[in-house]
Amino acid sequence: MLLAGPALALDSLKIMAPAGPGGGWDQTARTIQATLQAEGLASNIQVENVAGAGGTIGLQQFINTSTGDPTATIVGGYVMVGAVIANASPVGLADITPLARLTGEYVIVVVPAESPLQNADDLAEMLRNDPGSVTWAGGSAGGVDHIAAGIFAKAAGVDPALINYIPYAGGGEALAAILGNQVTVGVSGYSEFSGQLDAGTVRAIGITALEAQEYTDAPTFVEQGYAVDIQNWRMIAAAPGISDDERNELLTTIRTMASSDAWNDELRTKGWVNTYMDGDHFADYLANEIVATTAILEELGIVE
Image 1 (cartoon, rainbow, N blue to C red):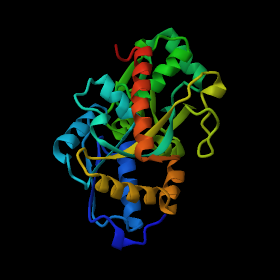
Image 2: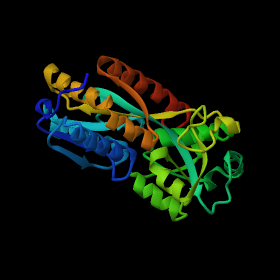
Image 3: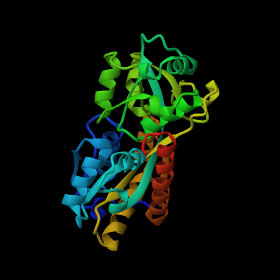
Image 4: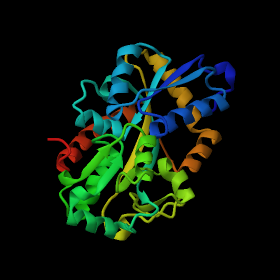
């Protein structure tokens, strides 16, 4: 159900993007901001970037400064689930108020345009010859990019614990390393590389979807013979300590936003899939993801 207009809008909203500019969380926060403004669902929206440690620095700051504040929200997702575990963070996603899962996005592996690597077989061969010689630029340690690299290594017959993974706090920093030929491959969500793919400055080695995606001609790893199937998801959550009425008001606003044409047009442009889920259903899903991700990180040797 759509809200009638600005009369029902939130007076103000703060959105923390717990990463540097240019990455998926920053893009998510600013897309939420733009859509809420376009739909008249919030009158004053501020986005703040707090980078570091896979979002756990921002998460801790959010909890410390925003408890009980019904105008405070934070974006996050699957990356943060793994980062909390990998960084042994003193706070976790169970310490905030989940609102909704918003989007899903497949991970894509790219190389600089002049790289000799042409496909997944080339990358697998280089890994098998010397795992340490392949440097992977991606998001935080233990996040979806790191997990995708580990799953590919395992599919290629290489111990995932041997991969040379270099975490970056933001998509912009990782992209600079890739374009500067400082790393062998880059791994991130499609939207973070889409501009460079269109410009021809990077090439796609593979995407972690089961089937080809209409927004890109990148081949899937599965069709190249490597069982790499993983999807990043992103969410929005509220501060701990808010009332049920305050939570429900935020949920109504986010639910309305997610059903709008403006939001879904943005998703199509960015190659994001609408995987909307909210309320108690999402809270249960999040709890299960924490358990499952812990098991994956242990299997890949990313955590003890």
